[in-house]
Image 1 (cartoon, rainbow, N blue to C red):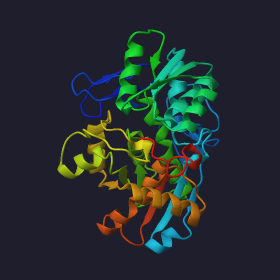
Image 2 (image 1 turned 90 degrees about the vertical axis):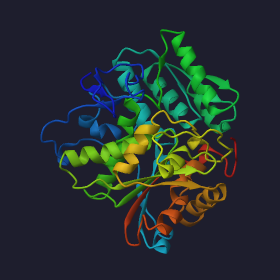
Image 3 (image 1 turned 180 degrees about the vertical axis):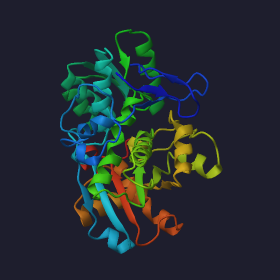
Length: 379
């Protein structure tokens, strides 16, 4: 595999590796970087979905279930009422029902190319389902460590793909500790961390590439996305920057983060000027996919937000549920509560003047409403 793993905070560089690596100096996960073919133009892209952007991804044999190529749906009611040109990137249309399929497809393909035969991860549900599905597609074994309070439909989906499911009682962080320990004690098991692997965000960057093509070769003024571990935020900024570096766009849109008020480490750090994101005591929230109190890429995410003029919004539970209902009842788009964070963040962004009337805004709706029963608070 060509390309390299590079620290986002310093000049440390190493060749691609299967295990997620940390910079020895900065202690942060590494990013995957590869050179695009010289002079690449949009007209040279072929096919649809994630692997349409193969020239911008690791040069490996694809593992695919038809992920990507999701619709960008224009808002008919909520956008006009808010005075915005509003669009919904509906990621629930991916094969396992969430945006995580993009990252899992690239991650599994890269790990297979690097010799992995069995993979493990910790997940509240969506990433676990995606990894289980793509591991099955690639003929690899998968073991998923999940919080025991995670959504029932998500756990059933993981098991349906033939993955071994390990339920871990207690806070979300205990599942992370359990999988790390398991991989240290089993040399045949690769930690396919969606929060720390450099290959997962490389797949998520395809959301930015698609938005660019969805808008006819243009970019919006703003993109709003839910943030838990932050891979989507990283992928969006990296993707738009790659398009700018290729000369396909002239500017990177402002990318904003939405988190539940019950667990908003990025919001608190961003507003206080802190260098890292930590939430000592996360509370219960319906947005289970964003309940990550210590994101592995916290320092990097804060730098990215500030570099693109982004803002971080904490949304109360009633705001999340209201946004979920509005999307379904008024736009016909049924999403899980975590996905509704993007819409729920708009009132504050408008009130602050961060987003202004008349601007073009894209909300990344990360997962299908079938992923979690409406209004359920599992955490």
